[in-house]
Image 1 (cartoon, rainbow, N blue to C red):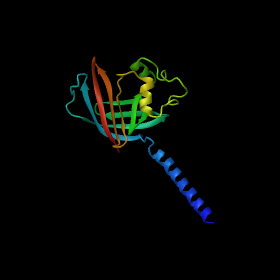
Image 2: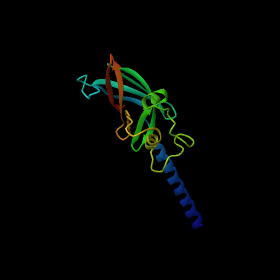
Image 3: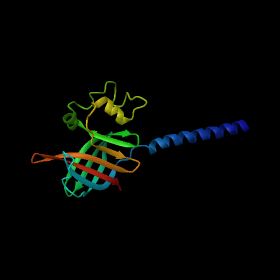
Image 4: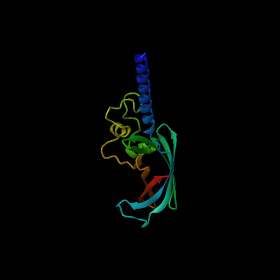
Length: 177
């Protein structure tokens, strides 16, 4: 009887441990949706500040597909929407262009670097989604524009604008509400 009771307790503990492991995986799932409040700085290509003060801004982020998000920036200086892919990394997620925007930026279609199965189907043990994406889709020196810090619940993103042949960067930095 003691052996059956001990076996029952052991089995129960094992189930609790397994459930806890599954739950921790869910907790680590990237929760990036929501409103981020912060500022937008405007800087020219020579890293000179164009607008001397940072403008109050918000970024509303919503998932619209598998690893795809819509970001709507709103401030006194911009009202812009972007569609981006996100890739989990150690303590957050990094973002990258999608579709034609990716092709225009990097000179080839997204997915050309993936040779076996689905995009993340051949990840190595030491790779995060982000490092896998970089290894398969990018060349050294390719520029990237931001991401999410899940430990601090922040988001940073830089995007280029051109007005009357003047190119400048708008850099959003915000914290999740």
